[in-house]
Length: 424
Figure 1 (cartoon, helix red, strand yellow):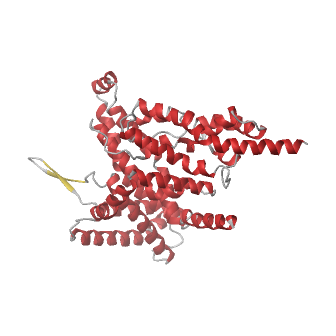
Figure 2 (cartoon, rainbow, N blue to C red):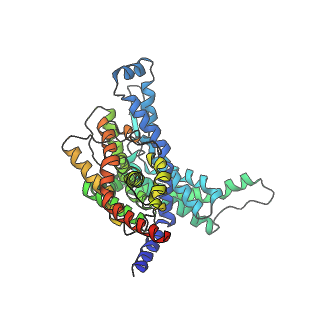
Figure 3 (spheres, one colour):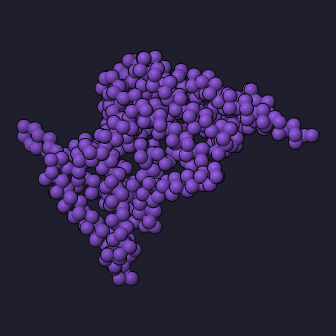
């Protein structure tokens, strides 16, 4: 019965996570990591906490470039996102050769929906694209526009509503003419819709989506209770052998990313951090799935040969946050001996973190993104405070082993019994 239920859960969630649209969003969010990291470092260098270093950057005149890098990376994240989503949609519908064109059409459509501003001086007035909607405030618009543009382009190509050039025309010229009708149709639809939205009280599509969708979701997804439940659900998916991170990222990634960006902007301006919940904080607390504690128990407490050997193999990767060897080597997937800690340890650590932040012992993360694969402690250094580094060490080296211990002790006893029986 349990196996049947587990199969149904896996099939249902796998169908969701493998959905072309969900996968396009998930893959696109993952592709943004490098841009996010570069932008995060730019903010840190611009508002460097050591005065002598900050004065040096200002003295050589490089500080303004850090601000420009931030504005053109994280501050323009929606432009990159809309391109990637539309491109990935085209690829997943077997239009790989058209994918870059589809991405460009998506950027065009996004900008058509974006109202222009004006920079007015005493002598002239210059039209400009405001940064408001090309940053995280426009991420949900970017997702919607990217998906729609990608799908409409695919629909037009599937219907063969394209201009076919004679056989002797060079391939590149032929491809350009094939893209002409889809581009014009999508651009015209975007312009018409942008005009209709301008007649509403919202003024534009971005404002409507931000007001009706993004703001309420941010309020819900940014609450501590919601995060604890979401992370528990993510781990439940992992328990059933499903990549939980890939499933929840398209849904909550834009929310947690926007909260992180607001923290970064506050840090850059020298203001108090407005949010506790951010993607970087969750990454610091849930680093490696909190599985290092189990590896340490295997290595130093375990009596069975099986777990001792696994601990030796898994400890070095685990110190760098790579815990797949212990997850699949134990295994933790569908192993009811470890179900409770595997599903709930991250949530317990998050609850403790939120309490410590509330009472002022631990500081919130500034919102900067860390590079995957940084070792324990170094990974938390991007959070902007020594308290986060110390807290990550405490979680992984003290709290995590304690949370795993009762369950590991039971499993280790069973493994010892099996090994004794096999040797008789």
